[in-house]
Picture: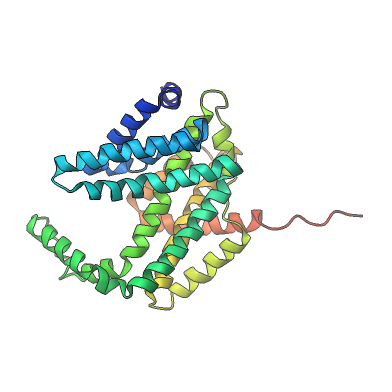
Length: 300
């Protein structure tokens, strides 16, 4: 089915526009687990048909999503902003992948760009806690009035959320973009080169310089209360988790671990996420460091 779907999307740009628009509505209807799927379609079109066709699909879907916002009682500009967020990063990463054929480079660029954007946001907008305070207060009131029994302001969660929101947005954007790219690359490989994506994904790494930077930033964030350092540390942590997942998949593919460990890994990410994130990030750092070492000099 996935092979047929991939072929149909790649061969029908109009259908790809409609599919992207419909998939983009799912998160708005509460199906958040599929948040990355809208961006995967235009990314696939870029990989298969070229950059121009991918941009056309993304723009067409953006128009559909902007118009659909009226049905949710929201202004059309909100639809364009939403479309830029869920479709833009995967589209740009697909362009990079098409030109370089390197998933590792895509992860490195996504992480670097995310870190730079965090620096710009913190530098231009100032204290994130003050910037997000009105939004978080409104959210806290909505949660309190919904009868869920959670008081964000009383529990101190509102201040924590406001202080860390830029970082979580950056992590979510990077993760969704990479997941959309992975899906697009998998779809692309299905018709004629099934299994090729898996081989590429298992070799993904952050690189020696970024891996060391991640270690330093995450380490410093543990002993400081600087919002910018904490946010960049979360972003690096997310990137290392992706590398850690690739390492788990490679260990299973090489019969170093049983296939059941894949199920265990993803189950822990769902049910005990904090422990799974720390464990996968640590594994990702070690794996990334060993595979980023220069080869030993050959004997003369």
